[in-house]
Image (tube, rainbow, N blue to C red):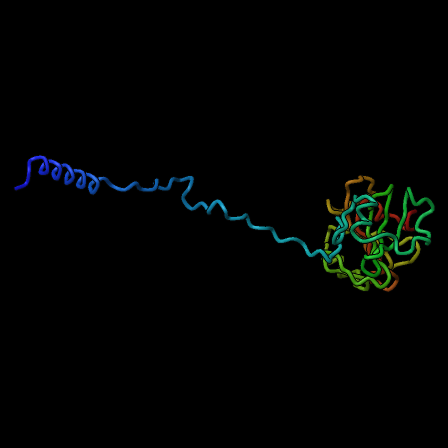
Amino acid sequence: MIRPVAVSLLALLAVAACERQETPAAQPPAPTAATQGAPPASTAPATPVSADPNLVSAEGWGPLRVGMTAAEVTAAVGPDSQPNAVGGADPEACDEFHPARAPEGLRVMMVDRRLARITLARDATLKTDRGFGLGDAATAIKASYGGAVIAQPHKYQSAPAEDLFAWREGASTAYVTDPEARGVRYEIGSDGKVSMIHAGGPAIQYVEGCA
């Protein structure tokens, strides 16, 4: 015979079990307009594709950027490979040289101890960000840049020798003095082909090194 107390205890346990079964499990909050379609918090933003570091542009080449200090240039590509050679009458004001670890034919010009321009000369195989290098035809450069390039007579050679300027902010026939200006100058020889390339600030207009 089951005692009354035991019956009451069994009844209470049964009621509690039913309540646990009838209580719904907690559900995650419904997605809102702010969260629908959002990527997980750990998803990294897409990395933009960078320009080819081997190409010379108005802003520089590889680790070199116009405006760098002399110390930064030396740290990036080494010191002057020929420290006893004359690069400028006053090296503190203007100096031009080939850094020890720079590619063949690449020279840097330092004006007031800051990188003012990069020059591609004899034996250089680098190209500009438009794909042009030494030996390319002036006609191809003009076709590529269109109205963004201006031609000026070469100082020492007769036509078809000329200087082709392509400034970052567009063509200008005036001598550029804005220190923030950036551009590329193609020196065209008497054969109608690129003999030298200068990239950087207003110093690309210098026709005799530091002069």
